[in-house]
Image 1 (cartoon, one colour):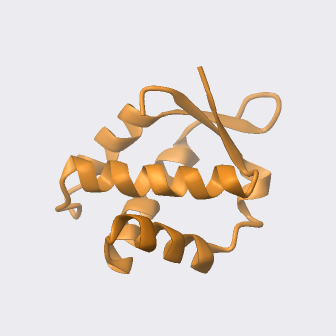
Image 2 (spheres, rainbow, N blue to C red):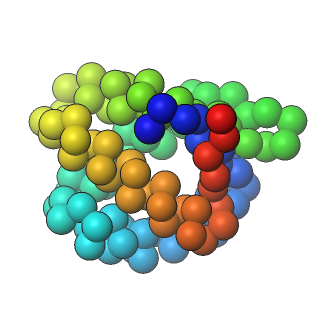
Length: 102
């Protein structure tokens, strides 16, 4: 996850959260509770980021993973967190809500 990711914040509201959670669980075998925890901290991180003129947020995947791992209530290893984030990004890209930028 060395590349940045863009997420159109206005499109994020149209995401089927339950479908996405199931997709991530199927790909990672992580529990719903762990997925929810990672996504909760990811959302907090994104909310602190600034949108560009197109309404997109540029997120560095390594910085995001480090932020999530630094939260006191996260007891997951780095591979699990990155797996959840990667699966989420795969889902968002398949649905046309996100993409990678160099």
